[in-house]
Image (cartoon, rainbow, N blue to C red; front, top):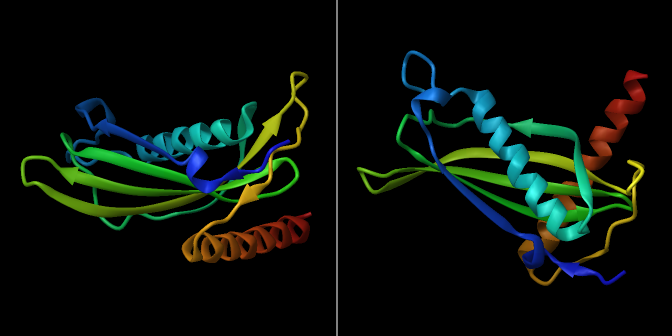
Length: 157
């Protein structure tokens, strides 16, 4: 199984936010943004594994600014850490206020995706090649997140 670079699976999804996604104040529901973050992570993980993938967990999601109707939501996802069957994905979220020509940092999400074989069981994924200092830094950050998450799960049992 050939290792892959971060760039090989990096993905950007863009979607104009419509009234159907908003509350009565004109702000987009957090759940609509969560769904899109899940989709962005799904695409990156599928490109990396070239298999079916499912979300196993979401560590963290933050919303720094509201997103409004008519804003272009942009979700950029990259895999910075892989395990035997899992991939840790960072999704950066921004919104372009199209009429104003201004881009706002909305936040980020961290998801763990698991590759599945044809029988729905966890399946091995390719290793990851880290090429830049930024990728190495992100890899270390995601390893720490993973350790904290696993410690939380073992404590909760």
